[in-house]
Length: 342
Image 1 (cartoon, rainbow, N blue to C red):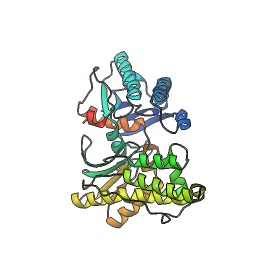
Image 2 (cartoon, helix red, strand yellow):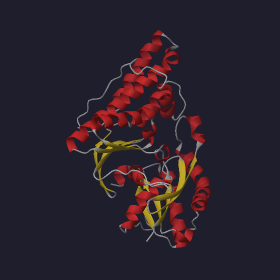
Image 3 (cartoon, helix red, strand yellow):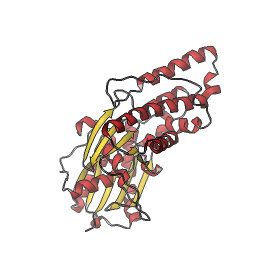
Image 4 (spheres, rainbow, N blue to C red):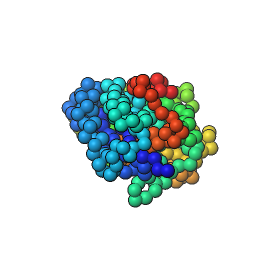
């Protein structure tokens, strides 16, 4: 019997709704918030207000695009966390109202697990390649950097995590210092293609955790390099933006892959995936694919539309939970921190 899931995502600054039938995506609608660009980062209060404005038309459009009416929905999957509390509250409250009005069960989803399970979404015109269990997933986003051992859709083990900044934060903070617009990651990726990655050397971390990450030292090394060079030449950054971006990006990718390679060796796992917003970075995508070819991995790199926050990933995660009868009560509340979900 077919299972149809409506997914709702509102963890940060993208309001999204999607419909899947079993594992096939029927629609995936995203409303992004350009208002934050002016401020160089996401403003939580503005994000919450934008979600309130967007959520009804986004859900309505997702249902219409899928050709599905609310009475045909078996469950509503929503992001419980982690994320911005106000943004999560909008999505959770809307889900509760829609569920009560239509007598539809609710399924809460861990946002990060949604990113990982996006590799199991199929498209209407074709089935996508899926990793086999267990597999390793390098989850890289603005707020989280993790290596996750995925044993099943419902059983995941974090074996490595950042002890300070995430990879996406390193990109954005270094971009801001160079005067680049927010979000900085895509801009650095574009400029890096024009630069020489060997032009500058930045510090790489040494942390105790075998598979753990750190990016604060890299960020500090980058800032000190700029400070010293700008003292000698005030126009240094403008003259060297492409080289700085290329060198920074290569260093971050090297750090990410070093621990990922160690994890595959230690666990003997050859199916390797990447997920999260930073998995849209072209340098990282190419590096993972090339490393996989050299090391005999089966690599799984998401389509760009599934790298950013989207409701299709929430719907697929909800699908697996609904299959096992894991439902949420009306007393559920959103949580901002990952530790509150685990």
